Length: 95
Length: 496
Image 1 (cartoon, helix red, strand yellow):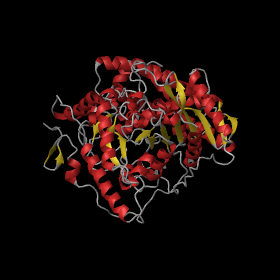
Image 2: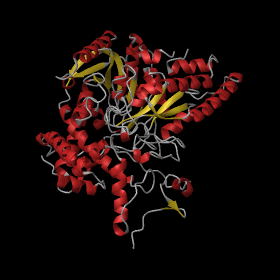
Image 3: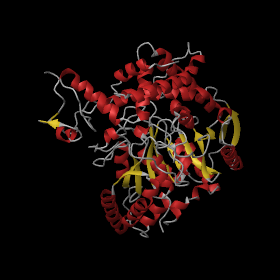
Image 4: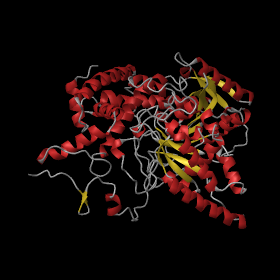
């Protein structure tokens, strides 16, 4: 399995990662090697095998829907890199 | 002289031979003295720790006036917490630049429980970035050194916690284990590490990596100490829907093996590439179990060799989704965006993530994104989830024949810093014996069983779901019959 630098750039865009040219070349080579390695899973006949959706036995995870206090806005905003008027500040996207 | 184990420290505190402030200050002094050599911590919290210690001391004074009142089980004991677990108002970096300024506004459930049990938190320990790694070399803040040999890694990703406990900087610690990240560093540093059953311990407040695999577990000098932490942190939590409403286990640590214990030896774990001295130490430990009355039987886990490829599809796939939240908007660091208008926001996301994530995190996000992308999903992620079922069934069949499975924790003792950094696949192979338990959701305990070339060797026992009590009882019986867990690296001895 060979991953090209074009594919690396496509994946990087999907993952919202800006990569340098060096990184793109290195990931092309490393991802190709890792995908070659994991390709051995294709040896397994899994036609009759269900996918694992959970390792636990099914159990009811529901709880009563009762209101309770959460963290307040100013506390949560303290973790943000940029804040204005009690809101997250982001770059303007409209001219 | 500092008590070396959590249980002896708690006894000394109750008997009034030592105050929590003295004990905590001694741990902090030791941290300060050893940090230049070890770098086990990312943040020390001396003010918080001493305030908690004073609170514990006041409680102990009250208690001595009226010893009939119940005392929190870990009152006054200084612990360390891996820096992927939130402690309110203490910086939590996850070993990443993207969270270098992140100060969590709440405690993880496990931290709430430890504090309710009276613990003192001395600091946050080093980790591979977002717990992705086997050596702490992927930390953005520098590698932790193995206390047994400073030129070697402590293992990872909970390498800071393992090194801190091994060197006596904290009496015990919490780590997280997604593919072996508690057990492997415990083995490399000669301490005990328990990965509980998936669903046994709440992950609320653990920064998510691979959500179907992540487990929080204790690291400690003895099995008894690990059990004491486990008893405090285990249990259902309404804030983590994966925790099961099962009763906490009744632990029986009386130095005896569980009656008629059947130990399975999986042939797939004793393979070429296993270091001869590691194999010899593990086989000698198995003989001890036999002398203690266990029956040892061969078992087979035929899909073991597929665990690594399964893990390296499922964990990155989950990581790529979990780490999507680091976008430079809601928390953590933000890179400057060079553009304006419609592209500005997209550029801000891509720049922030490109600049602030390290190489391994980006590699796994890329791998996971690829495995989940249209056209490849079935061939990679879908096939991995089916193969995972086969691995889980291997364990279910084995546990019809035996009570626990014994195996090495790692193929080799601790490797040199830099030895695997250029070869991601070679690094991934370090986890080959620990990944299967995560994929099956099974509990596993690692504990020291000897040395290879002067470096600690660990053995692990794996059990069926919610079988921690048997693992702890058996490993504790082993420690009552042996003395490996009393070994201390020279770097720790110098300050005793």
